[in-house]
Image (cartoon, rainbow, N blue to C red; front, top):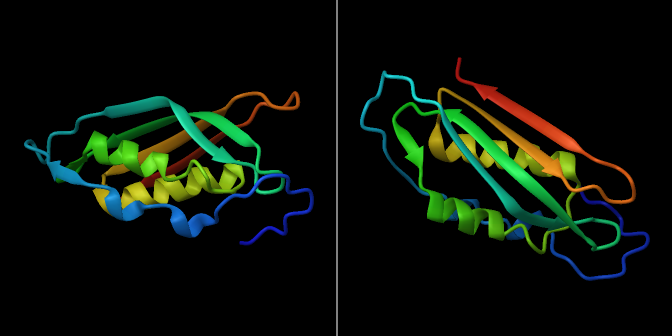
Length: 132
């Protein structure tokens, strides 16, 4: 969904610059033995699609691997590709989940974004996936 920039003050990129192709995995050595993995960072940044001002967030990924685990260096490069992207917070959360599920094919996964307060508003978004 493209959002018409009404009060755009700074240039920013669209979702096409998000680099999901950099995501990598490595084999999970104990398939069939559930393992809960939690990855978090407070260094996530994207920008408001109306103003271009930065939005800062903590991103928490929780998952149970099936056959592979997420490689963290590649994950960091993936998150960095959002730095210049103008996208609403709710769509970012779902996009991260969709990209990670495609790369990792986990048994279950959740992505939670906890945005810093801006303009007196605090936003927390959670998206979940469970393999059928």
